[in-house]
Image (tube, rainbow, N blue to C red):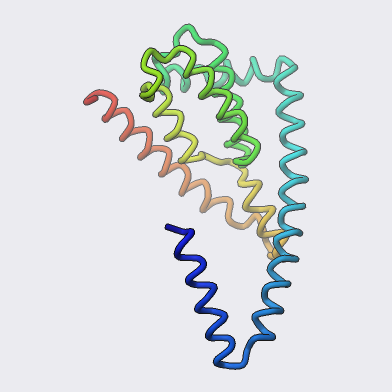
Length: 191
C-alpha cells in the first residue's frame, strides 16, 4: 500500500511545485533531506556499533549471567514454557537489556537469535508458541530506561535538550508493556 501512496504524494508535490513556481524549493528540499538522512545514518551507525560492541563484550563476560539472574523472576513469569531452555532465557535477557538501554537497532539481532532458539523447540513450526508471542509483545512495547536512539535523533537535529523526553518515554513504555503483557497473558489462557 505504501508503494502506491508515497509515489502519489511525490507526484502531487512535484505538480503543485510546477504550478506554483516552487520547483527550486522542492529541489533544495530534496538535497537538504538527503544530507540530513546521511548525517542521521552516521549518528545511528556510531551508536549501534558502540552498543553492539558493549553487548558482545557483556555476552563474553559474567555480566550476562548476572543480568540473566536478575531478570530470572520476570523471565519465569513471562516465559513459563522456557523452564529448561537456558540459551533462550539468556538471549531474551540480552534483548531485554538492549531494549532497556533504548538500543532498538542493537536489540534486533539479539531478538532474532532468541526467536530462532525458541523456534527449534517449537512443535508446530508454522505457529507461534506462547513464549514467542510474549516475546514479540515485549519487544513491540520496548520498555526503555534510556531512549538512546530518540536522544541521538533529537541531538542530531539540534535539540536544545535532547534528553528531556526521558520521563515521557518511561510512562509510555511502561503503559505499553503493562497493557501488552496483560493482554497476552489473558489471551494465552483462552487459546
